[in-house]
Image 1 (cartoon, rainbow, N blue to C red):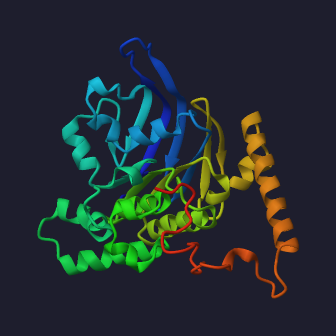
Image 2: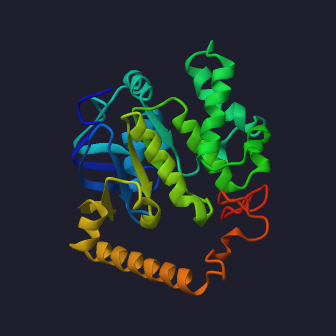
Length: 310
């Protein structure tokens, strides 16, 4: 395990180069952050804020793309990940970097190989790294992750088209965790996941990484899903960091209008939850979430009730 910072970003500026009829675009401006071993940090921001671009670059995925793909590049500052300097990194070094970095794209669930079962999909990275990996051990490891992410055991035998979009996204998260990465970078890992289990999914990611002494950078627009699990948050708005610290520190003393808006939204959500608990609980003290078809794990029915169905 590394004893240096897992991520050290200092005044990082990331740009999409001019391409075709489009001029150059600066997506991230002066980003600064350190991520320590075993630390879980949430990267929060609205759509277009630059958070996904930062995740793409820090994970090494941007460096694996060709220049024709209009890939984002670091044009200012320094970014070190697991001891590798990311600015101008060579592809040969990226392959070594990615051995320690797990990455879950926000659309990863939609890109799963269609003719493989969930068991095969989750275990596949083990065999891509070591063709002789014990199949029984791989199956057990995959099943453990699938269960931890609140997917029914029967999911292991299904193919992606038989799952809801939120379930597919959780399968992608399991793939990202199967190699025990020193650093997991997860971009909107709860995209499409039913609201009732979003927090639990983040809990699993954070809990597994902490138990290994590993770290995670979790990109999300959903503060409510992050607040139980992360050590700190970095709030990014229009490419600039506008808040950094624990959730209580950042929201308790907002220094930027966007952060103030997040604080108000979270407060409203908390009030709504309190009202629901007080007014909508049934006579036995339970709410209606355990109604017909509910299996007790945030799923409704065999296919689940994730936000967007296949």
